Image (cartoon, rainbow, N blue to C red; front, side):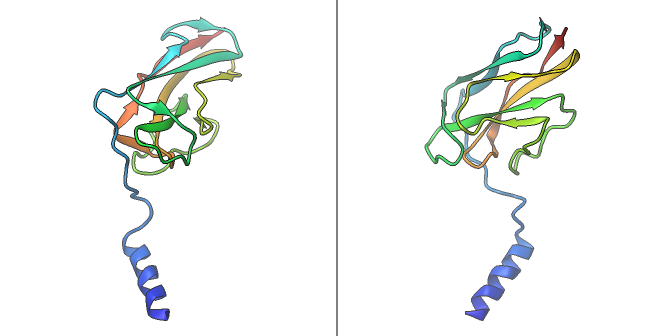
Length: 139
């Protein structure tokens, strides 16, 4: 019993949890922002609608082929690691209940938005499903 535990601990040291297996995305799958449009001037609160083609939406944790859920990146400069769960903070919003739109309070000024479609464990698909990054002006 102690030997098995020791092997588990040694394995964890040599094969850290940082590189998780990514789920394959089907050919032709696409994620995009329906609205607002790139360059659009809007007022806060902003309604953001998510689009998806070639896959289905399912809550986080649901293991069903060709499904996942949306993550919205707000004003990010660097893209999160593709082989780790997408962070959850004020710049990385998770929609793990299967939501396809959200309403955000954004301060006046220029903001960028981008969608990333993640698998049941919040990890980007392979190849990744990313929308184009859009810029909006909140009045």
